[in-house]
Amino acid sequence: MQGKRALVTVHRDEVAPRFDLCTEVLVLDFDEGRVTRRKDLVLAHPSADELCDLILRMDVETVVCGGIEEEYYHYLRWKRLEVLDSVAGEIEVVVGALSQGHLRQGDIFYPEAGQK
Amino acid sequence: MPFARPPATRVKERRLHPEQMLIDPVYEQADVLSLLDGLPVGVVVLDAQERVRFMNKQLEALTGFSREQALGVPCRHVLRSGFCLHQCRSGQGHGAGQSVETDIINRHRRKIPVRLTQVTLRDRQGKALARLDVVEDLTRVKELENALSRPIGYGQIIGRSQAMENVLSILPAVAQSNSPVLITGETGTGKDVLAEAIHKASPRARESFVRVNCGHMPEALLDAELFGGRAAKPGEEPRPAKFQQAANGTIYLAEICDMPHEMQSKLVRFLDEGLVYPEGGGPGVKVNARLIAATHRSPEDLLREKALREDLFYRLNIVRLHLPPLRERGEDIGFLLHHFQEVYAARFKKNIRGFSTKALRLLLSYGYPGNVRELRNILEYAVMVCQKDLILPAHLPLLLVQSAQGEPVAVGKSVAKKKKA
Image (tube, rainbow over all chains, first blue to last red; front, side, top):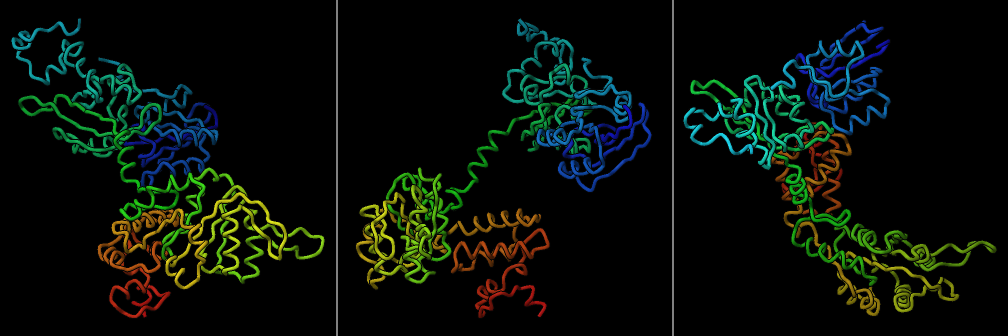
């Protein structure tokens, strides 16, 4: 990932399971696969509309989140943003995958995932 | 044959507790858990760390996650409900049989209203072994709830009282017919809105709805306006009459009792022959328009006072709709108060939950001589000046408060202004 800005929705130490209920975001600037700047933002209250506004204001190019409603997903896509939704996992693991360009929609990063 | 084993005796021999049956690998593979697939609700079995150990087919369909994808994943990333996120981890979600209404966002990005019931399975020492979350899709229930709570309405005409239901129930048949309609009702009861609603529900809906208030214009002007007149200058086209503008549509004449007798006779000819005769003579013009007329006075009184021609009355009185005044609409007052509060709160972008008890009492006890129009205007004002999440008596127009207290009315002042003074 080169010269890009991404935003990850955060809930405690993992990707927030819901975009509309998220009250914390992590904004990351990447350059040549390295995180050059990271900024934690705490939101006043959960709101999908306001989060979309923030995303557009901050010139984010990639959004990483858990569950997101179709309406907001298509709005962000219409604004030409990359939306990697249904991502689950600890923030650092997800950021690592993102910086290496490996992160895909629907990726789940839990060691026990898929194990009986 | 998954249901062929294990025999009941074997369960007895091994003396398994229900929680062990759920997490025991033998039973997990085929028997007890596969029974859950037959249930009409979604079920997920979680271990002590709230990771998914099993989910049934209904929940797979509801969440969009397959059993394999969900296995071992913390349930908040599979169910993705508002409850999971904010209350579950704080321990409030661990009661046996606790049931809450919430919503989930599934993998197909659909938000689904659900009822979530959590049951914790514990060992004899009370240690949590597993948890069962039962997820019931409430989409259909919510749709029905919305349909039931929706007012009986027709266009912008809304109401739940028997008096309004009597009017609204015959509207579809009235709209489909081509007969003239006479609407009566006090000022502010919604005669114009009703006329437009009839037009919009009629086969003429795609054509024009032309409204003329007969009470506002001098006689000569009204005649030319309605039936057409000569051109203002030689060589110019005469102004098209309102009747011609309403060709194939509906013409609505408000306050028909203010129309002079001569013009009323022209209306009679239109209703008989379908022809309108322009002011100043000339041949009749064929017009296909439906006539709806309205008056705020009793037509029988108008007949007695000779303000309404008898022949016109009998031709108009084929379909007569009477809109009851608000004071006779009982439960509609409370309903309309909340309706307009929501409408204006949305319009002014305010987060207003409702009314304080005192304000509601004042609003319900007021007589509303101006009917729905007055109620709507009161709510527009109250929501506009309200800076809180509840409408208080201070946000109501002064005339309403004075009327409740039996004081003389001073129009245009609010309670807040009075207090300051």
